[in-house]
Image (cartoon, rainbow, N blue to C red; front, side, top):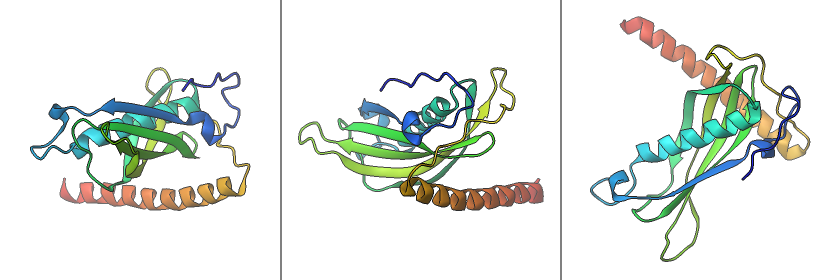
Length: 175
């Protein structure tokens, strides 16, 4: 996929402009003794793919991971299978960008793509010096499906912020 050319760094963008995919053929060194891919390998790939989607949306600067939410693994991935991660921006705050991340796998012997994981990554835009970015472009909402996506994202953000406050309180309690 070619990245879209962005002329106006502040212009709202559709989610489709951020869509990106990453794929690999799994290797034995990425697997556990049972021949299935380590979840951490999939999480690393998911994080990388989500960050690229966020960076495509922002169009400049740097991106850092703030959270990986609700990553659910649906079935195992075996050594020798092709794994594809697909990510697309689903919500934008002032400097935060949420991306839906879906993981697919397929056997090279019997090629049939199957969904093996899904979750969300939250990223924060930074400027070129690694400091807080100016506000990022808004996410376009043009259809009813976009509006449903936006409502669901807002609900996830409320939960995410509550978890963040809980983590801060928990840390202070034990340190």
